[in-house]
Image (cartoon, rainbow, N blue to C red; front, side, top):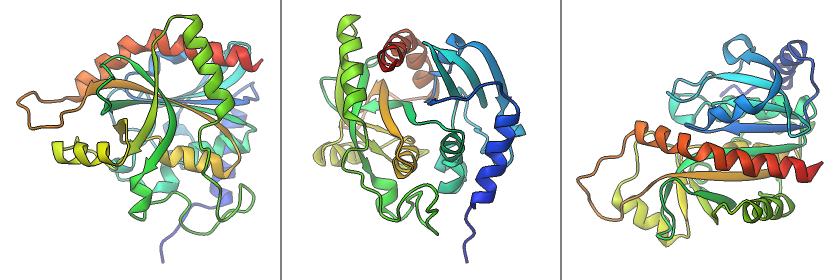
Length: 280
């Protein structure tokens, strides 16, 4: 019989984090590959290494700092994850989504998720941003849904609604902030795959056929768990590269993804801080 994390596991992690910070955050942020510098915007931060938190998954991927940063950002008390763990690193789904459960137990009501993604939509260019309007849960369709196992009624129902996973009000705020600051902001559907290998041209042609605008290896499990716990979610993908529909001699590397992330941080920070200000 497969073992799953319990409420006791989640509470132990949440209690540890609570004891290490002065703050009571209401907004959580998860920063993807190359996007961690956004956490430098937090004032008077408390920093907690993932390795210190009971059962907290540690990221092994370059570009993921592996710590919580808790403090003030745009007049909100926030909890920022500098990096995340991924399914392809060998973690179970309930392990990689444990940080979202911790946020829920600590009173976080709004989750902002970011990621580095490959652009499928031909209108997208490397270094641009995409507001996620919906996602395709290909990992979950294959049986690896983060809600598999005993339902924890303290968080939400057995069969949560996912018809509007990404909050329309938050999306409208993001679009308004982007327009006010002359930041191009595409909108589209994110496809979540398991990784860690990048997609083949045939994979990309299939994803395009089913309606995906961008593809990555994270975010969907976290959003699923966030919605199970009734959190409002805003998702933004940084388009790190334009994927190939046909075989190509040009190879994609993780270093390219990180470099694109660094270029996107200023625009991403402007939009997130603008949304937080509008929420105030």
